[in-house]
Length: 272
Image (cartoon, rainbow, N blue to C red; front, side, top):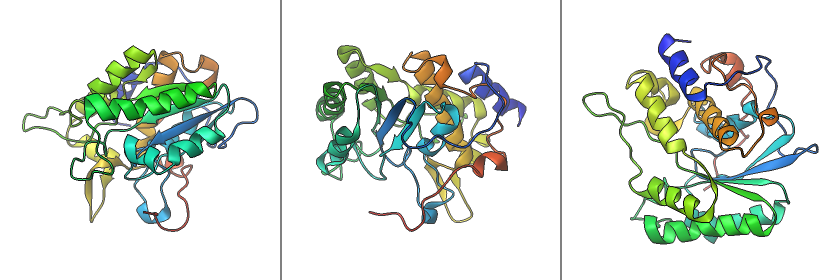
């Protein structure tokens, strides 16, 4: 691991951790609770045709104990509106149990004003849809957790990492305060991480291939780095106790093949 990367990840995670490597947790943990993810392509489980594109939800079990299962319902191309309108929120709420967690991350597709089925306005419909998730989880005895969206890779000529999500992060932060919901500020954490790494080194965290230069979606190293930030947020916001998170220090080289080998892509092709 480079000195720059090690310093950046250590500064953002900053916590001791066990060095042992174990497979991801099962989708449902018989010993504890389940963390459900409602989100978009940046978090989603990927199919084989999309590799090496990787959602951070695929790597999140690396950082959670066996007492916390992960049920990743995130889907490519969905916004807070379309995910709910398609009945996907209903499916999550039908499966969620008292004591479970619902982690909610949307904005990438809410921003797309050219697509009415997806678009929401930050200070009205976006907040209204997010509240459906919050209220639905609470009505079933589960705990909602809001997460601002992962930042894209965008730098200006001076090498400054630039925010790309407009007013959506602030709208989510405001809703979290109003509703008393734990907030994981992934937008701020990833923006800081990209700034620390710099314009060139961040390329190894995004889905840059011989045929594609994707500054939105992560590859395995990027997904692992973001998942570590998510787990760090879950600990720091006291959503999960220390016993239920692991590997948050700088011992992991997310570029190592040993970590990629533990990620699993679904067979087949990505559905619409």
